[in-house]
Amino acid sequence: MTDILDIARRQVLDEGEGLSRGQVLEVLNLPDDRLQDLLALAHDVRMRWCGPEVEVEGIVSLKTGGCPEDCHFCSQSGKFESPVRSVWLNIPELVEAAKETAATGASEFCIVAAVRGPDERLMAQVRDGVKAINDAVEINIACSLGMLTQEQVDELAAMGVHRYNHNLETARSHFPNVVTTHSWEERWDTLHMVKDAGMEVCCGGIVGMGESVEQRAEFAAQLAELEPDEVPLNFLAPRPGTPFADYPLVEGTEALKTIAGFRLALPRTILRYAGGRELTLGDLGTREGMLGGINAVIVGNYLTTLGRPARQDLELLTELQMPIKALGRTL
Image 1 (cartoon, rainbow, N blue to C red):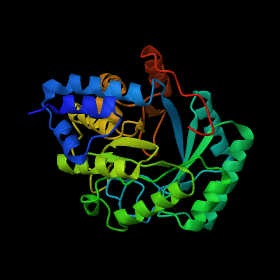
Image 2 (cartoon, rainbow, N blue to C red):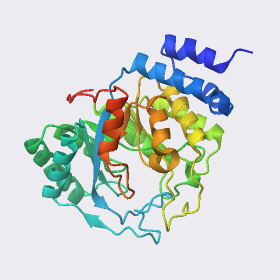
Image 3 (spheres, helix red, strand yellow):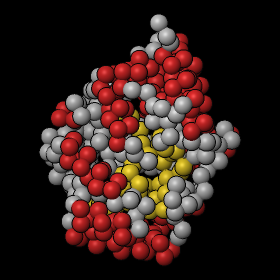
């Protein structure tokens, strides 16, 4: 029987063709004593098809909390008794956050809002915010505002929004166990409108929400079908008051296999460290992931959870001789 890593070496490393759903499942089921071989191959794939550069991004929440949706992992849902309360950020604070992000060397700044989809008030706030940021600092602007109408997609594209984030969160088969107030298909439709409008697509999810290993492979294959420009990979950090508050953390070896498996399914995609890596991987695991397929990071804090200090990530990139991707209006 041919070894899956030998197959991946020929198929992904040499030819640039991502692994199929079944092949990703084989990778995720590799014994732990094959982990270093797997990470080394994923790193080679990243270097071959993406290069050594790392894209650095900062994120800020324009509207935090009070969301009407019931995403079971999220402390911003208004349906759960969580510590997060609804708050809006004003334009000067938004511009200051963008400046701080640019000062780290980051090329991307993402404006996020906890909503089902934007209403006119939010669109007006984003419109003013994008203009103010562009007037003050040179940085690519991304947005994450939930599900969109075609008119809203067209308006964001006209504003010059560079990339739109809308996570599928998990495999289609597992989604009803995570969210009940909207469907996986609704998210899929927004992503295709964004893609058709010419904006870059950022779409990932969260590992550790009770999905099976088979469903992780399913999710990787569904993302590969979408062909996003970026995949943020989060690991569940259970939040107090949410239905997933008592879920266990993903084990480090499991997380690293997932990183490598997603890299082998998506050889040319920006694969970004996002929330939960600090708890799941710690400093050593974070380093291993950077040498196992990751080629982008969010620096600083996330929306409702603390991240690593930006300095630690930037020092790690210097140590690993991975240059920060230079700012460009297209990537």
